[in-house]
Structure formats: structure tokens, C-alpha cells
Amino acid sequence: RGRGLHRRAAELEPKMARSQVNIGIVLLLLENNKEAEAAFKAALKIDKSDIAANLHLGVLLKLQDKFRDAKKHFAAGRLHAAAAKFHR
Image 1: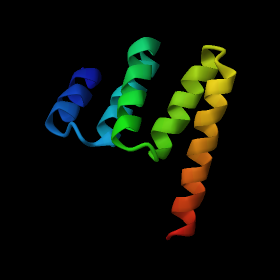
Image 2: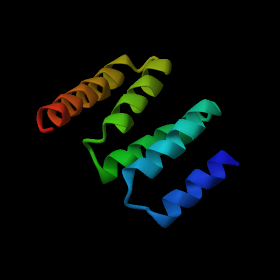
Image 3: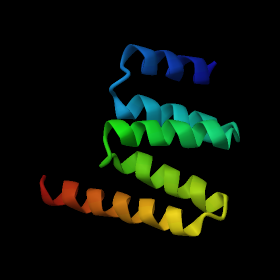
Image 4: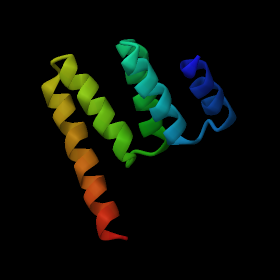
């Protein structure tokens, strides 16, 4: 049911990265890694600086032993988090 609600939110607000991230998290928890990865990547197409999308995609890629790609997303997430903190 949670997955359906998040999908509906994404349909209503397709340009909100947060909706895609939330779908990705639900899918990750359901161990649907392929769709979770697609959701996180969709979020990053909307907002490449989305911290949650970068970090969750990094975790997912690390779980798949894709360490080089995971490292890129961890670094991007940290960079954007630091920038957000600086601009408060």
C-alpha cells in the first residue's frame, strides 16, 4: 500500500525529486533494487543536487558491489550537504 501512495504522489507531482526518492526508499525496503535504482535516478534527473537521492543511490550501488559508482554518489551527496549547510 505504501508503494502505491508514493507512486500516486509522484504522479501528482512528477517534477518533485522528493516523491521519486520516497518511491525509491519504499522499493529498496521491499528489495526491489532495479526499480529503486530507477526511482533514485529519476529524482536526480529532476534535481542532480538532491542529497537523499545521491546517498540512497550510493547505498544501493554499494550493495550491488558497484563501489566506484557508489563512491561518486556518496561524494555528490556530501558535497551538496556541505553546500546546503554553508548557505543557511
